[in-house]
Every structure is written in structure tokens, then in C-alpha cells.
Image (cartoon, rainbow, N blue to C red; front, side, top):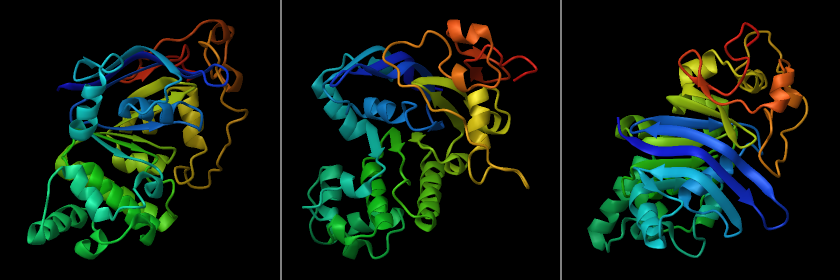
Length: 319
């Protein structure tokens, strides 16, 4: 399988008002056709990674390490490459569909701009039928004549998904694509994304805190904490047999994943705000399995039980 995306010890620091390290050596390899769910608490680095993949990081950041797309060094790529990548290779879906769509332009016009062609008469109607119909929007041609602010949140997100998929992108990135939707609409949009992935076999990365959505959307899962990937592998193993203490704690407090008569357990404390590289395991202060080594030595990802885990105790009976 072709390696589509590769992160190797990726570091991203914001420096506008003090130094904040959002990514602290994140590593991940994504192969062609895989569907990844990137999960973690707020502050884990998910959104920064999503922005990095879209080339949308603010100008005040400093970055280092490896970030490669089909072998191309994205951190050193010129503006012209990024423009072509975003137009032809990347489909991006954001958590706020109203913010992602232009409120001054009818959504049909935005779709036409995305495919880069001029359509008139019946050809235009067929374009709307094809792309808006594919995301189950009712009356595609009528919807195309509306502005984003005339649509419900669920309809606006479907329009955003249709635009993201219009050029048949090789890589689909979705950052919290259902967080702005109510529960009923959220389930339908997750179902739509699942159908799109299944039918088109796209390589996709979904950044979310919704572990129920990840169960439906992802073949693989990466768990992020304090800017690092602490556990990664098949969704079946990571969600069904977690080995990192943070992964276990995250699953224990996820609504809908608890077993019968089980209570949700909150994770004590809060994720750290890093200003430099973590000297030890960033989860040490919250971990029930912590040992002295965790506070003084930074764990590297190693293969444990057919997945990668960054934890000194992942291969012991305690984990």
C-alpha cells in the first residue's frame, strides 16, 4: 500500500503571545485507502494537526520534524504546490459549516467554483443533482439557489461535504465534522460520511472527540495527548483492547461506550500546556500506573500487541 501521509516527530509551536507547543513530536503513517480517527481531549493537538495538513497554520508558528504527503516535504513546499494540493488532492470538512461556506454567495455557485468549470442550463442542474444528491440533500437544484444562512446546520454541513468531495480528492480531512450539529442530525451526517468512505475507498482522517463516530468511521485510530500520538493501530484493537492508560481513561469517560451498569469515570486533572518539549511522559501526573521513570524519561512509541504505544508499562500486566 502507498504511504499517503507521514508524520515524523512533528513539532508545532505558537509564538504570538508566549511560546505554546501544540505538537510535541507527533508521529503517524497513513496508507492509501485507510480511514483514521484522531481522538483526544481538547488541547491534545488535534486541530493544530488538522490545520497543518491543510496548510492553514497561522504565520506566527514555528515547525520542525517531518510532514510528508506522497513523499513530498510539506513544510518546505512552495506556495504554488500548496495551492495545487488544496485544489486537487485535499478535501477538507470543518466543524462549523456556516463558517466554512461563503455567506455572500449561493451554495451552487460555491460548488461550481470548487469543480473549476462553467456550467449552464441543464448541465448546471445535472451538476447539482450529482454532487448535492450524493450527500442526500433534498431538491438539489432548489438548494443550490440558497445562501448558507438559509440552510439548517445539517443541510449546510452536507453542502460543505459535497464541495469537499467535488474534485474526488485523494485525501479527505474532517475536523470535528459533527460537533456543531444536534444529536439527530449528527447521526445522519456520520452515516453519510461512512457511506462516502465505503463507496469511494478514500484515504480519510477524522479529528474528533466523538468516539461513537470513530467506531463507525475509522479502520484505524490514533490517540493524541499533549501533542503526541500515544497509541495507534487498528480501530478494533485500540478501542477494544487499549494498552495506553490514557486510551483506557478516555474510553471510560466516553458516553455510549460504557458497558451495562457501568458508570462513566472522569479523568482527574487537565492536559498540560507545554512551553517546551515534555521531559517525561506528559500524562504522568494523571496516570494511575505512573512510576518514577515516567517523570524523568520520555517514552518512545513501540509495537505492543500489534499496535504502537508510547508507554513504559504498556507491555506489563499493569497495563
